[in-house]
Image (cartoon, rainbow, N blue to C red; front, side, top):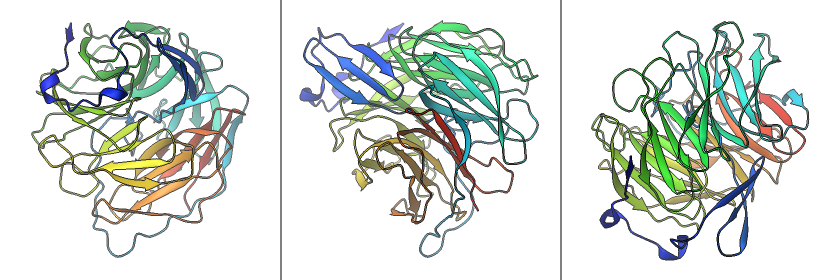
Length: 425
């Protein structure tokens, strides 16, 4: 079932769209892919953090890996945001596998947060298990279809063990790996989406207590909703048209009606909003024209404590973009924060324990971790004194990996295969 985008509700920016006859080829190499239309070849560099929410794309994941759309830390900020400090990197892996996106979950339910990364160079995903003593072991290595990228973690069958969902670009599908509960996973089951499945978020969008999937399809310009049956299987995709080349997806309640909505970031710049009805169906809403000609990945969370999910996006360059919710499904003026050229991934968490969500980002060019600290109103200042990260940093995610109540960082690199964890002091 494919639902056309409501043109009346879209402020079109015609020079950002592909011609209607154009087709899109994705050639992926880790965080890099090329978009080819019936015009000239355009080189593009992309990142996914996971998704998203994480989990799926939960900006601040928990050991139970239960996804939430709009995390809201408790507490009241006061004064200038405190600056968190991090130890130097703990190297988890340094094998050339061209890692891409990451997601977290306690896969063996031992109380310690593990993580999984997509490995584009070998068409696999790799699991790293937390030993509870500050180290990580290489766990399951699972074969995917060609070009795995976005990855999400959630309990799809209610057995208490988080499962893994990966977007497979070339195949136009998501791969499902069900957790056996003993550190192993069942054979992959593929579910068709649209062409060029790129990013995936796993979360309950229809209030039935079962995890659903939200997938961006970069090649055919669509958004797929797969409603979960609660046993690891899904209904056929409901598909909505988006602007050209959607890459990142984020889920949150943008108007405070208790139903989850969706934001889709398109490579050619616009951010499309889809408002949820609460039954798993969506209506095309506003289209945000941004200050950048390209968008990559996007997160949704309440940044200013008003109970409405705001948006954080990144472009193909140096911009971190914040859009505050107006509470009615529309968003205020874009506020841009400029980092070093080469921003590749973003993750959200209360990194300085003041009760508000901050932004951390990876950077492919400067080998530095970037962080923007929230003053409690949804405005941000740069953190200082952060450690060096691997060169060609790509995916970034966060979670309390050592159980001390502080949010740590995990970063992957698409050149050199570095996988590193940074524990907060």
